[in-house]
Amino acid sequence: MKKELAGIYTVWLRDLKRYLRDRPRVIGSFAQPILFLFVLGTGIASSFSVFGGGGGEEFLDFMFPGIIGMTVLFTSFFSAMSIVWDREFGFLREILVAPISRTSIVVGKLLGGSTIAMIQGSIILMLSPLLGIPIDFLIFFKVLGVMFLMAMVISGMGIMLASVIKSMQAFQVITNFLLMPMFFLSGALFPLNRTVEWMNIVSKANPLSYGIDAMRFTLLGDVSLQLYPMWLDVLVLSFLIVAFSVTGAFLFNRQD
Image 1 (tube, rainbow, N blue to C red):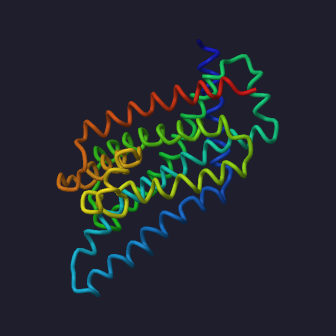
Image 2 (cartoon, rainbow, N blue to C red):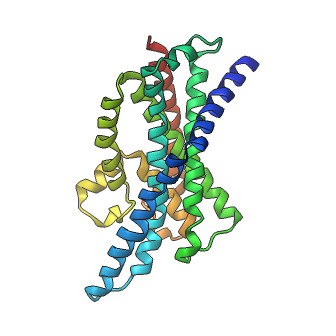
Image 3 (cartoon, rainbow, N blue to C red):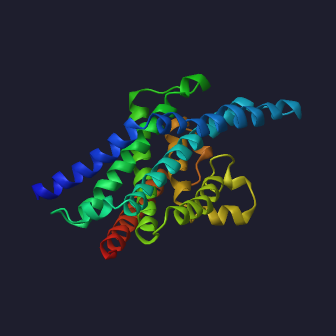
């Protein structure tokens, strides 16, 4: 048991150190969320007044939890890319011959990707005072808990794909195919209960929808913005963590 825990810790620590030592990655990972929030968000918000409507500030508040969710989504998924990277450069084979189970490697990867996503999401969360969103320690740790659930789900999904995809190019293609639709159909930028019916239906199969819904209620406390009850959001995310983690471990154990 100690050997397995040590293996999990080592894999987790390696991923965390790789992230912290890669300064361009750290800096660049915040460019897209900030661009969406302060350029796209401000531009859309200002259009309300141009067309005679109000609610620009309310739109930025509504959008902010979605931007945090986007940060967690991209960071968690791209963290799983390290499996493909390690396979191409031969480092994965060295890990596989270590005296620990492959399941421990998967758990370490899950925790590593989730920790990195939580770090980046927390930094974006620190921007909330700029939007006038009040946040205290209790709200901060509640949002941190939601971020952890989201990150574990997306990391598990990424590990599932990385276990069967053999090349970096193919993984990047799948990433582009999955992530943007997941983001736009999660309710991050617009309320799904006020859009066309098919979007509302598709969003129910999107794991990110439940994470952003829980995060929006935790941050803003507005029941009218909720799509689902908080207990349902947490239940769905917890179920998906187990399902994706078990499937990811199974697929990872089957690879050569």
